[in-house]
Image (cartoon, rainbow, N blue to C red):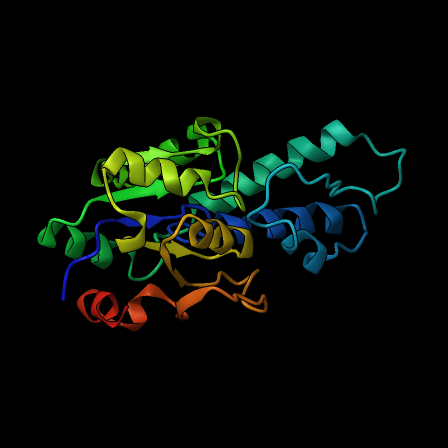
Length: 215
């Protein structure tokens, strides 16, 4: 069976679980203020760009929003710094390198976030290219980041495989013509993924060679 033309991975929630960190940090700030946070509502924005979302709407308006945001950033960064690379990611990258399959990241987040964490985790050099929101006209669920990643890799999208954890992300990959493996994060595990060629609990569930040949 022919090898994929490329593997293109999302970052947030797929390589590193920064998505749950957002929800946990928002919840913690609400708890400090004696308020409840609607975690399902927060999870609904995961993977999207350009959505108007006020995480503090349930907190009395007299409370300083700048203070809430500063506290959120401190807690979020602390939570993220403790997160490991998600299971199976390194094994997938190792297999791709061994087989000569080019690798890319396609993310809705900015480079200052994605590149910094990839470098911190020792993964940045593993990817031939990193495509972020500011590199393309439209973010996910538009296909732009995936099309740009394949263009940079000179890879045929129809022969490439995407790895996603969010509904908008998997729509983006599908619209770009890639087959999509979905590995939901804890915030998206109850979401519906209509275009998933394969859905796994973690990337460690199936050996990389068996996973790629199954697609």
